[in-house]
Amino acid sequence: MGGSGHHVIEIPRNITANLWKLGLGIGLVAIAVLLMIDDPRLWIGPALFAVPGVPLIISNALLISTRRPWLRATSEGVWFGGGPTISWRDISGIYEAGVPIERYGYSVRTRAIGFAFHRKRSLFRLPSTLWLTTSAFGDVRISTYAMNELPSTLVAMLEDLRKAACGEENGVVRGTSELPAARLIPRA
Image 1 (cartoon, rainbow, N blue to C red):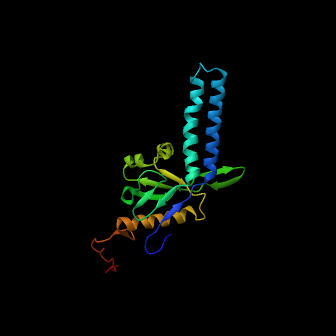
Image 2 (tube, rainbow, N blue to C red):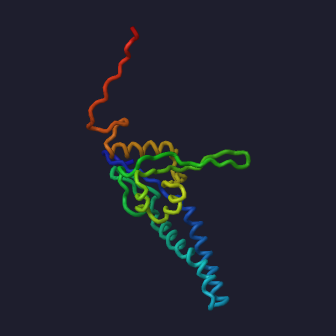
Image 3 (cartoon, one colour):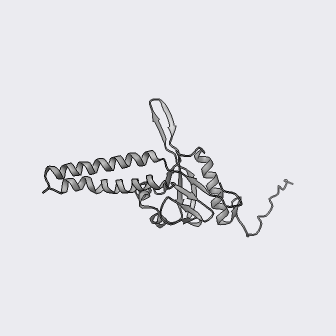
C-alpha cells in the first residue's frame, strides 16, 4: 500500500500459468505447421490448431514480457490487467471466491477473490481474457496465489477502498442524517 492517503493494492500474476498457456499455443501451432507440410492443399485441419494457438502465443507472450498485474485497485476503481478502470460505484461487492477441492483424503481451498457488479454489462469492460471465466461464473474471479496475504485479508482491504470511494463509513453513507439512538425501555 502507498502512503499519504493514496492506497494502491496490486495482485501480481502467477506467471507459471502463462508459461503453460504459451507452451500450449506453441504446440498447437507446431501441429498446424506439421499438418500443412503433410498436405498443403488441406487447410481446415491446420486451421483448427492454428486459430486457438496463435492468440495463445500472442497474449501470453505479451503478459510474460510486460508482467502486468492481475489487478490494480486505487481510490478511483479497479483495473483488471487490461481495459479501462472500473469505478467502485459499478462494483456491488467483493468476496472470497476460493473453491474447495478434496483429493487423496486432503481438503484444500483454492485462493481467489471475486467481484460482483451492479450491472452485468460492466463485464464487457473487462479484458477479453476474463470473458470466458466471467460468463461461466457470472462474476470476476482473480487468483491470489502470487500474494502472501490471505484472500480474506485482500477482500477486507479492497472493501475498505470501495466503501471509502463510495462515501460509506461503517455501512452508512456519509452526509446522511444520523441514525436514531436505540434505547431499551423497561416493561412497566
